[in-house]
Length: 437
Ligand SMILES: [Fe+2]
Image 1 (cartoon, rainbow, N blue to C red):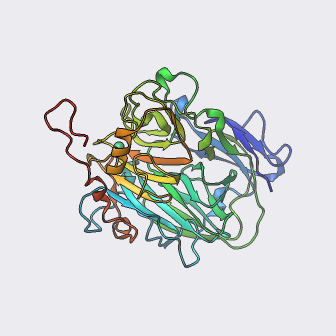
Image 2 (cartoon, rainbow, N blue to C red; image 1 turned 120 degrees about the horizontal axis):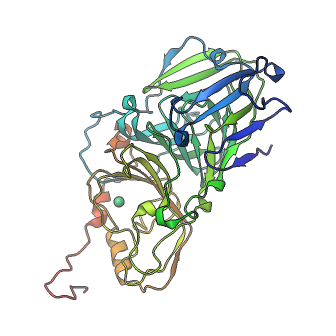
């Protein structure tokens, strides 16, 4: 079955699966068509300014109160929530990991969530968590919503089907999706095994960055974001709804599927985006801009220019700058940087940072090209070069990222990562030419 989408970012969408199921000219008629219940899902306070006011109206078989019974606690021990500090002994450092291993036991998307870092404080609705998911089992009767934040899903291996109450998103590596806070969904696997990254955003919603002097085009263009058309199922069998709420998990048993929205309209909705449609802008004579030039989505913190989260990619692009050290420069950063590699090679680290891997360069910890990367880039002939077949990304946050015990003890952590800079030589010898022997 092919699922359809509506283009645009933050549009006021409308979609119906049955003719006339979406009320026109009003939100809450006395008796909605088909005997549906009208329900509002608020993604912002009622009184948020127009530019950030988000809500949708859902016309569903049962109201959501029928999709919860009594809750009881349930454990997903590897999914951590900020603040989560002091649960391991690993010293401060720059860290890098090989891919998180695929599970051997049957594991669905929620069971397979492994938190690597947390930042900020979920109770203050600031900060984020960086997770890796690994799964080999579809969610069938289990459904989930996260009251703690929206989920930015970045597949790395295998395609997924995000079956949400507002429609179905098919997602493959190279695409990303955002599932808003509170949205009910389940995840079906298209491929036998899947892995990817998730950024859980406790703060203000991800939005498109301003472009400043770049103007009205390039970077991520609004039309390339796709929101699913309405889809529902009428399933009267035992189901479960699992809720993540302030770091704890709760489950409730119900007798039917909660994915029962026949029609909806509004601007609070899930979406996906193909990273290949990102139009990168960069240096065309010398130097290169800060990596913020590759920001796809940003979640503001309330302090101007200081993001709760920036989602930044390092896409295929031409390198043409003259008399320039072309890879990312050496860096110490007040923001903290969690990186992943979806496929290919990352130009600052051609070895060691492998697809599915992770690197973490935390608040004020130095990083930059490894010794072979520095050597190569310092001596390269500066003709135009296409950096191709690559897609790395970064979850960057204003908050320090606290490593979880799982991340600290993960057997794929490269204990020798720090050695990648060991061979950087002293080139200073008091002469203007330096020592390049
Ligand atoms: Fe950096």
